[in-house]
Image 1: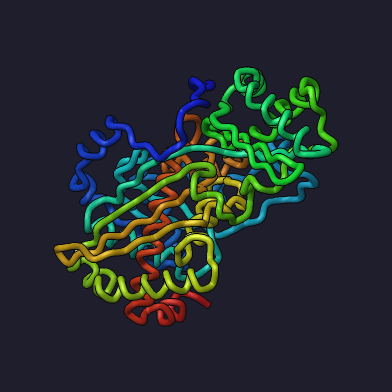
Image 2: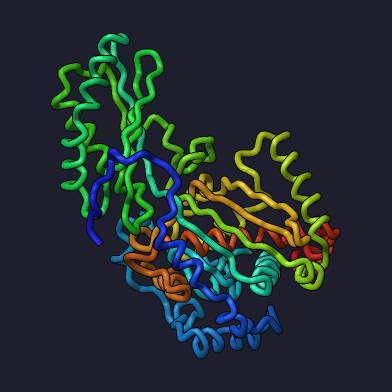
Length: 419
């Protein structure tokens, strides 16, 4: 899919299309109530591994020859652009979670999600959260915004020169749009922000990047824009740099209150009887635990409100060939729990900085491609789907850990499944 129409003058805001709402309303979670359970018996034996591989091949019709170790990677030419000084592959145990039933903008159905980790208890926790969600209905997941930023900085002798420069920059929107369209088949410049601090100005270029994560794409496009600025601006800067370290790239910041990558919001209402039977706790205890955790985040200055979203993010990122360093911004989440009028528990998380891609980067390596294909997220047109699956996985993890702590199960679970 090539560049969509530019919308640089559109107001930046969260948005849900009416056609998406109709699609969500038509979804019937009962159609997925009979999805088969992953064979979890013999979690550490070769027999158990073979049973799960057979399940993936027979039930999910997915090829996992590289992931299972039956085939090996020899295509060294494909490493170009991903790594230098290559010596081999680091092996990280990969398991499967699910089914997670999702009613999303792009992700609809039951998904068996691959995750890579060395932390015992993690997959058991995700699976428990997924079961509680599945037996209560479906996780609703909505994509609200997209945007990847680069923030070059220009320094001037004084504010008068800077003011003349910024006025000229704001007149160049059409030229900037044209340059970006010529620099990339997929990038679209959607917003330009100016932040003046004394004699420097930070220009915040925001793009959509198709189905790529987009960091390299927006860097190249921004450099072309900066070269145009340097060649044509009537006021020349004394100094400039392609990035002033304020775009939020690969670090946790307060910036994702808008969007970085994709902004996804999710929700599920857990039925009281399911909380009691599956999670072995109550809505009241889970709500109290969430409030305590909320205050803890505020007191410690945590960015966002969450228990352990980075666990889900890094485990899925490693399995599917994402840039794992982007877990830094992706792990900023806002979680919310409340008891409704029926005594059930409403659970929601919003992720404003989720950086994922289904093309480029490490997505085409054999095991990563197999993991993406397992959830039908490989290739063009699948990045929003992957983002929604990632957010749903995070929600299952948040639900399970809050339940475990509220009922005093947390330590015992780690004693059983951890080291």
